[in-house]
Image (tube, rainbow, N blue to C red; front, side, top):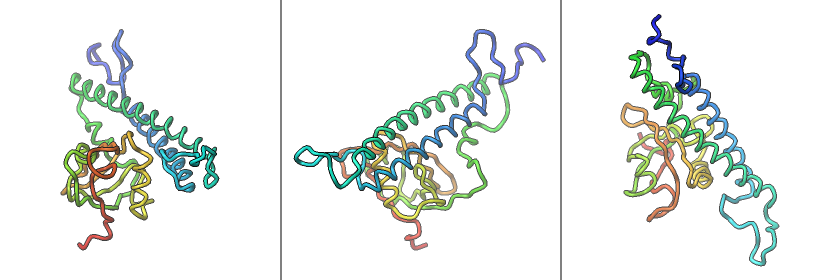
Length: 220
């Protein structure tokens, strides 16, 4: 093999280390693990019936006696830390994917595009629809994320057909994710599309600017 035909996993002298498919999959796995931790911590907030922004003191400035203040404060702090880690890993994944694709293009290496493998499930579990979008307001976070009316939701963050039971779960996840990216996978006609949604205040109502209904409620 000639020097200019080195394998993809080899780095030329003076170059930064070459990003491999395995590197990217490891980053994605680490990000999924962080997402699971955020969900678990969110359960602590749910059990105390609070989100990320409610005050922890009463009107007189004393710690609230209807919640576990220490537990909630600790959970909020950890969620913020994990959300920052999640954002950082997402940037690394995007950067690594760009480098991976560019190297394949430069070297003329054939093979399945990494983006295809990223969007493919890592197990044999086939996700069933959990909800459907029937309204998207222009200028809203959902609008900018690319959600469209009639999109069938396959997963919303860590929620999918294996653990989804009611719409309130999406509401809770959105409350915990203000300002952070939520990965949403939808089925649009015959295509599966992966979107990045960032819930947050906008000129309209709510944090998403869309209306989602349970898929089971649809008259098909």
